[in-house]
Length: 260
Image (cartoon, rainbow, N blue to C red):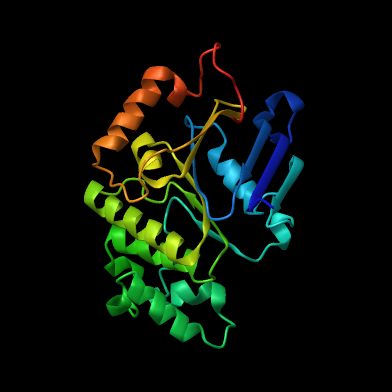
């Protein structure tokens, strides 16, 4: 059984004024994700990447189709963590309190928080408030909050956007280590192809609106690769040479369109 099964016939946003002003965000979108797989979703701005994560995470259930997470609907699944584009930390709570928000009623929550913050190298800042943290530290706190529930599925929406390269690379490595140690399935949205190739076991490319899958391929590179490894740039170069319009959501008519 797949960790995530997605079949979206249509997802429409309607402003309620007239049908002519409605926007079809996703259409005929199909995807199966294996347990433990790190899948990167890549596509042009506005193609429905964030919408897709919200549907998989059960934050939005207004669509035509069927989505299941570990065999049940997203709304019934309790093993999903979500990391958004911004950290979304509560400014009036310290780091430990922010991380513990989602496990507030667990009897051993304090121990879990301390252990995870130590793993994230934030244990010395457990009582610090968000305004006193750097951007990278706030993202680490948000990542810890996403992992504190020990999710089977982790959804990440461009979580390292706008960070300096060294800070982003440190967080990427930390994310991969956490996913590997905890055997988590990850769906990671990005517009950065190098980031996707570095992180992903698999790349799923989306078309422009309405979003659908135009290319689905495995990343055939060593699992211990680094962002600066020549193989990452070589993979990127070869991919774009074969599909020069891929990042615009377009693929040559001579190539097969859809899941491979």
